Length: 407
Image 1: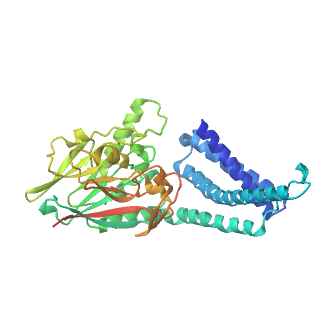
Image 2 (image 1 turned 90 degrees about the vertical axis):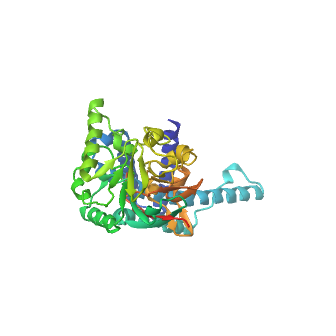
Image 3 (image 1 turned 135 degrees about the vertical axis):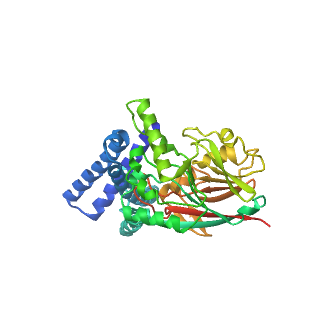
């Protein structure tokens, strides 16, 4: 409850400064009234969406409402920061003038007027997130990037030297709204000609039926050594108010069937071996295990029958599983593939210089390759999008990893 109160107070503060900005732009009463009504409408629809609207609104409608909220309020947040900073300056200047002026009275204390350049600065800075987030909705959400990595292992079986895998994650198919772009991305995956395709969870947002319009298209995916998948937190139907437990179970079984129809071998705390010549590697898949989410994943069960020295690739949707149970495990899991974070779908990434997103305050491992204890983790930035119907700086990802034997 305290968080909700603080959030609402924050929004009111942002709107207060937004209104101050509007007053500087125009003296028209109708402009001010329109601002208040529009802000109230956006806030009302957003609160409705997050409270009871998820069950009654379509996913696309919810995404639009949330997208408009983020575009408008992040832009207004920038204005609020600029104006708040100037208010601190104005208060200090007014206080200094009050105490350095002889015969000052309480009535004589006043704040200096806002400076014109501050209004221009606020407008210019607010235009950056506004245009960026708008671009993310129009173009960024389908700006698919193929990210290629080569990872070296001393104990990689010789027959798998040069073995290539493609990882995709977090489809969130309920948010898709452009068949041409999805078809392009599927072709892009196949063009990589990887030996195996691995999917690390969150095929849908809420229900299995979201995947029905897309399963024929995704059935075009192929790899010579097969395709393997695991479940993510959204795949269990936990974010829907079901009429019964039976109905929820039927939804999960329907999603499992859809994955099978597409061609994925869904690993539910189990493993498969891929063999080449006399060598083999283990593909291990656990159910979702996440800090703050359901913990169905059972690494020990999934690894039964795998020798300690076997080369292991683990599919685990949430990277907190790697942090909590995998990277320090007595059994060496050479490479773990995760997703879940989406890189928050917004941030700044310039190779070899900067990689930043607000999601780093929630997840230590949130995008790309990490190495600890001589074990690798890749956190895929996600194929689709959720809530905010766009991507800015953190683009939809197709990961291609080549395994090499370290000499």
